[in-house]
Length: 174
Image 1 (cartoon, rainbow, N blue to C red):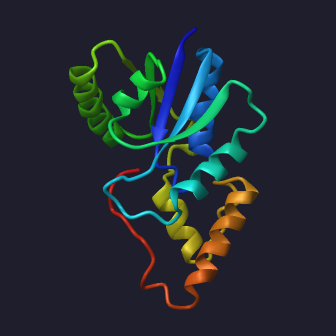
Image 2 (cartoon, rainbow, N blue to C red; image 1 turned 30 degrees about the vertical axis):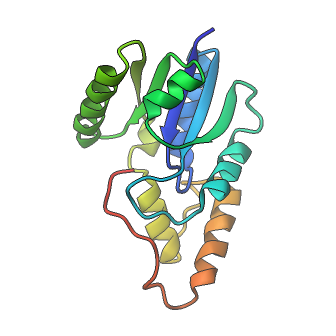
């Protein structure tokens, strides 16, 4: 059995993430969507909120499981006996970042392979940052996220009210 890990912060999960994980589930016996709890960037949703949203996104796919984790991704892979890390590539700039990360992971754990899937064309512009920024400004994100994510974003931004100066914003790649 080949177990793959698709790691990320998923803040929030969007159709690009869902596409990559679903396609990975057609290749591997099991896919663990691993929700990272403490990245070096600001997040809008708490880890338990993100885990619940990701679980809901994949509730109908028995080959996809969801787990939260912290620490190094390769250590998480070893802990759950995963042989593969799945990453998604949207644009050329993603390649350089993913390439460096894959080399570092290979240095740390040579027995864990990194597989990059090219995103579907209709999702190539999507990032969690883009989704958050459009949603924060009241834009239509219905073509970017499932309806329950759209609702969760509306609720989260309603907590901030008219003053959106305290919104967690990051310029880091997600």
